[in-house]
Length: 599
Image (cartoon, rainbow, N blue to C red; front, side, top):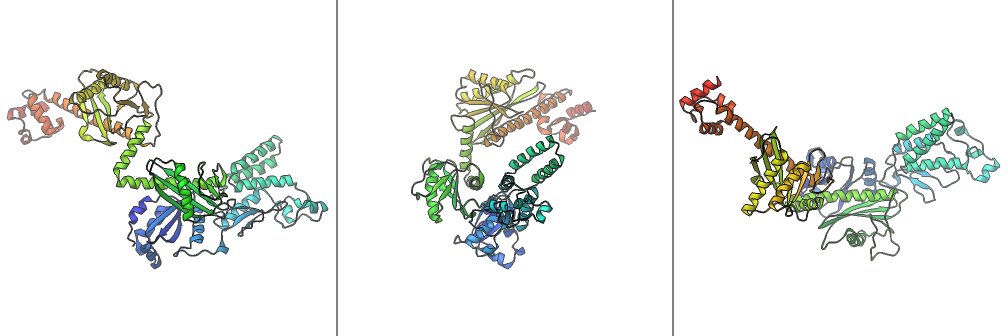
């Protein structure tokens, strides 16, 4: 097996359809494969080599690098694999013959155009759609089209002059309903072109446009009581519902273009490059760029595009990019395109998907090796999301617990650099509040906490999170004002129901994306404060129940009760204890009194 760490490589690969490429120690491409699930397929080469044949085991031993490209569907992966094998001819791939390429559907450039399938792409003004991954799938598309919109299949010259001379007669195809007889002028050019327009929309994936047209015709037929026509149109609508449109990886309408996209953060950028020649993707690559200054994405692409084109000897006349850009040093004939829709837009989206995934995986690797990078990124994101002036390196969160006002306690948890600092957790027995008053309890806890920090000269947190809505937040702010530190810290409240964040003085709450890391940290704070508070609350309730129960026993005072509490933790364990166990804490007279009390 190869010397590279395949386990780390496998962690980067997603459970998505795509194409994988194996490179040897000289960075030469030696194998290209397709997969419905990239991770499962690539993993199969390394999990159990005994199941591999001899040739494949040799291939695996030579692998030194793995690259992959994600696509939308398994069919897209099939097409892209075909293109890459033909272009690069990897040593361990079975070579694909050019005369056995995938089929296309063509609308011929002629009067009353025929719709056919072909394996040859001829530049004669005809319109080509595809290619299709299998002949079977292509025939399903053709059969569906012909059933929905009858067109001629003969090879007659149907020029207006010849039709006018009446040289042709309708054939069996007309008799069985597969053709409407344009050869005898029984079908107008306008009607024929309308059918062609629907077919082109279907082949371009614009099925909803065709369905809207047919739905309008259906409504008109029903209004005119033409129920036979309405039934035929309803059948067409049902078939369109089950129709699947063509692949998006390749398009005959695109000749030779380069596609560039970029994804970046504060210190690093990733540029994806797709090369499209004669309508097919023949090369994919994602490159990494380290920022020297605070360069924008546009500035980075201005550097990357000439370098990558020169490296891969690209002479494409068109470059597809995600935004307007001017690049120096390129020939005058090169033009830039920012597509808004269509096949070029789909190619750009393919590039953007790949560069986004590559960036995500690479950043995860960086953060795994350098935890401080993740910490800085997380704190920077929190500062931005929560509109803070400084990084929230020190965060504290308050939560109250009680049962109908009994045994009220307050808990505080502390996070430093985005992680719990459990040695700094604190809890409070509420002293000044009687009855169930959450606001007053919060006011007391916040005041006591920061009064002590100020008295001891300890640093204040950058962010205080209050578990509760506007009422609890107002109570906390009142204590901060009493201490004169309300402008030195930021305090927010989080309401449980909709995870709303409240700021003092703001009428409307702040809503963060449910998947945002900032919200996850705040939720972790809230949940940790609740857990810590509930634990302490239960301990206090159990302790006070224990004390009140045992103090009723004659001859057992507070000191003995405290000793029993430390030794046995609960009344139940005291009842179950043997005389020898009780003798560690009580004398014989007290043991006898305890037994009589519980009997």
